[in-house]
Length: 252
Image 1 (spheres, rainbow, N blue to C red):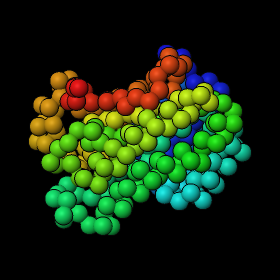
Image 2 (cartoon, helix red, strand yellow):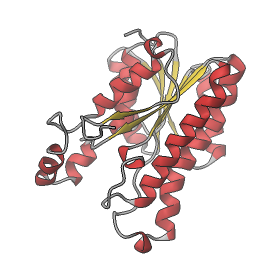
Image 3 (tube, rainbow, N blue to C red):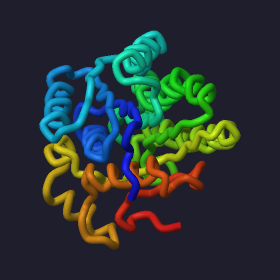
């Protein structure tokens, strides 16, 4: 697979987990990477790991639900690294517990929509004009299989937000293709991040494992390798797809 030499990549939500794995892999493949999040201590650790491996990274703390924060982040990246070639809009999370829809609070609904769908929209809105002007760019969004696989145990606000990210990405791809820009989405299933290892009991991990034809749960590196492919020249004629990284738990 071709490298990312001379590319500038922004990976939002990269202080830990999937985002950190993507940022680290991109840096190892030659990209200059902006790592982003709110936890400055965690961001410093990711930056230090990249630099120890010989890569180049800067760290930026910003609230991706606020357009003014994102615009300031974009300007800082352009000043320190150059124009953004690759955007991985990874920031997000589930902010409500699974349960009946009527028991979901308005606050939980808005938190999930804002933290996932709105954050993705605003980040793309800031980065896209420069890509269109340069007539090149690569946008990768992060959804979840919850966005297109109905399940009674899904947190509905989270699933709805992720479904929105998927159609946003497809419509975006249709708009920006003539500008030489690609847009694709990755939909992971259960990923054993450090946080999930702590949150999901071992017995539940085993039960989840049994729903996958590849008998293990995913790792952040599994998602990072998929992102690297979509960011590479090997995927030059791929746009507008939702790629399940799911170990065979989702087959359509």
